[in-house]
Image 1: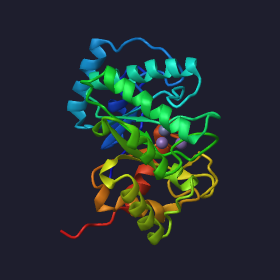
Image 2: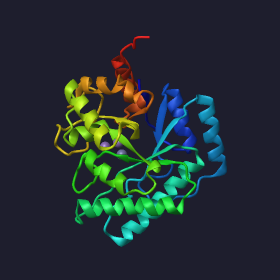
Image 3: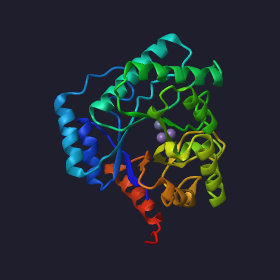
Image 4: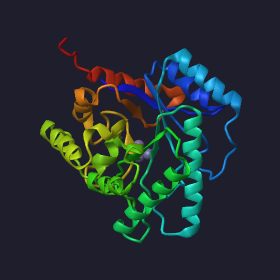
Length: 286
Ligand code: ZN
Ligand code: MN
Ligand code: MN
């Protein structure tokens, strides 16, 4: 079984995301450590860091994942955007390390016209530079699979593999697999054999042990649409079966399985999606 959780609001302080996840009985949680639509933010205060560790201890939620800012594009061919992106991502990694967070999810950027190959090279060289600047940082960067909208990179496992291939410190990168994104990108894992083929391909091209987090989202648009629009579990084009394979795959046992779906009033839709996921869990022979 996956460790079910959701992206939770960190409003009022990062520790509040864990508090909220605990209130919902989640086993994992994703959060932003700063405003995701701004380039700059104040450094984390010591009290927030202390409260964060205390909340983690109190709730027992140790499977924590951070998502970086949506503005960051470390594959950009534009000097000014690249400079801002490097500084911002470096800051994201520092904050994660301060909070003892193992994983920072990022999108592999968009080449915005320079071409896939140039984008892949730029992204990898951005990571290499940041790794050099932060030699002791312990947070792993998770490259998220993308739907392949526009010029975004990461629409195929091969593209992620090409990036990882160019990263010098390979032990510092891994992958976050988003069910909506891979489905929209063309991996149809609804039939059991489609799921197995997708997993086999991932294993051949990247290696299954690199998957560290799963984003659990259904898709509003069909497979191959390259559109990134999340739907509630079972209500979209993927449907319940596709999630059944993920939830019961012993090769993914214990990984954070994070919802990034609309929350509804007071998180009632999170509760419903978590409930749906739990009903898919099949008892394992002991
Ligand atoms: Zn994402
Ligand atoms: Mn995602
Ligand atoms: Mn998405």
